Image 1 (cartoon, rainbow, N blue to C red):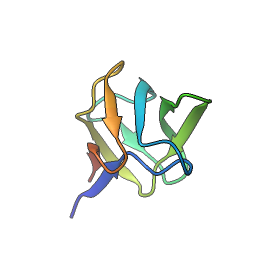
Image 2 (cartoon, one colour):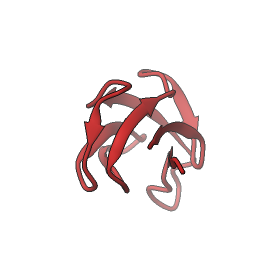
Image 3 (cartoon, rainbow, N blue to C red):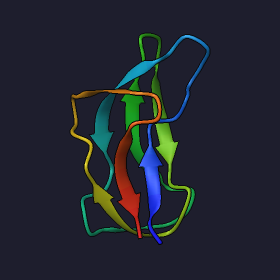
Amino acid sequence: MAEEIRIPKLGMSAVEVTLEEWMFETGDAVEKGEIIYTVETDKSTVEIEAQAAGKITTTGVEGETYKVGDLVGTIE
């Protein structure tokens, strides 16, 4: 079963973030704990770690704005 990659809650006031950069491309192997993408809030840039190991599929687009909880990829 695929592990969903969702935009996490990053603070009390952040409800939207900008997906800044993917560190991996679709089909790449990732390990749990590796930084897989970065997001920017109105206050900072945050690195997001993989919650599982496997092959990543990215669906979120760099430079686009997403709400907390939005699906931006999967790891299988």
